Length: 78
Image (cartoon, rainbow, N blue to C red; front, side, top):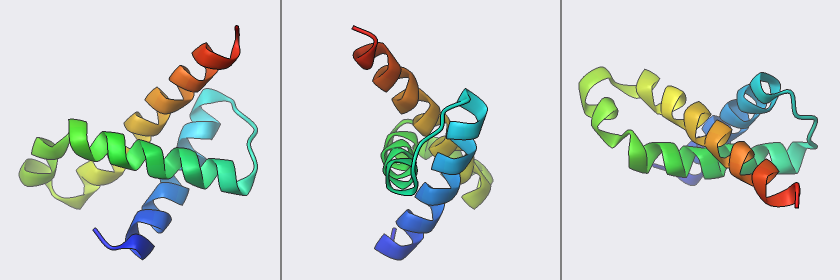
């Protein structure tokens, strides 16, 4: 996965995930969340990429970003 593609998918996934979770974040945190989510989603949902193609990559990135946001909220509540 190229770095530019990772940033684009990460930005899209971060934007979608922050909106779904009701989080207001700046541009860089949103991209960071999306990239982290893309990495998590790629590792966890790798088999879906083989089965369904690139659309699963976006789904995995969004799910990974949602997981990352949930973990971040859990860690910052204390």
